[in-house]
Length: 102
Image 1: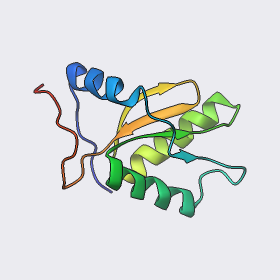
Image 2: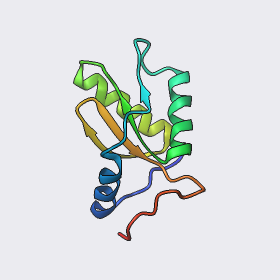
Image 3: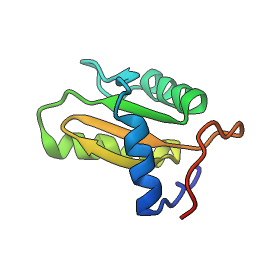
């Protein structure tokens, strides 16, 4: 498991502004968090660096557990959660997103 990048508030704000126009790339279905879904999330992170994942579950505690599992498994950094959508960031070797200095 990779370790998450620590972001300053300025960097988080920058990522939030970039994420504003994004649509969720992964939506959890009725089967919840499966290996296939995790693989899809990892692929999307590698490709985009900044992604949104929608967890349509009504149970807030369960959603929080799912977010925590995704973050722990991918080594990504949680940027924000708005409603049922988790925004996360993980830099790729290609470094597509330039973060402002901390």
